[in-house]
Length: 195
Image (cartoon, helix red, strand yellow):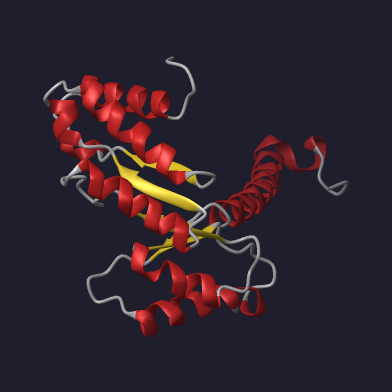
C-alpha cells in the first residue's frame, strides 16, 4: 500500500485501490457468514418417497461431510418424519448434530389434539432432540387464540426435555395481525407464565 499515494496517483486510483481492499474484506466476511449459516441449517428430508434406505444415505452424507469439507462446519440438525427418527439415531455419528422430527400433524396441524400430542411423545421417545410443529393457522384466522395456545402448550409439555420449534406458515394468513398473533402465541406456549 505504500506505493500508492494521493500525490503520485491521484484520488481516483487511491479510491479504486481502497475499494478492492474493502471488497476483499467483504468477501472474506461473506464466506465466514455462509459457513456460519451452514452450521445453523436443519438438513431436511420430508418426502413421500422417504424410506429407511434413503434416510440412511441422507444421514451418511452428514456423517461424511467433514471429510469432504474440513473447513465448513456441519449442519445443526437432521430433520425427518417421526418414523425415521430411530434410523437417524442408529446411524448418526456426529455428536453435535441434533435429531429433529416434525410432529403434531405436520404440515397442517389438522387432526385430533390427542393424536398431535401422542405423535410428539412418540418422536421424543424414539430419540428426537427437537420437535418442529406448525401452529394451526385455522385457529388463528378464526381468532381461536386460546385454542391454538392450549394446543401448543400441550405439545410443549409432551416434548419433555426436547426443544420445541413452532412454524408459523405465514403464507396462510391474509393479515399481518394474524402473523403477529401467531408469533405471540408461539412465544407464550414456551413460557411458564403468560407474556
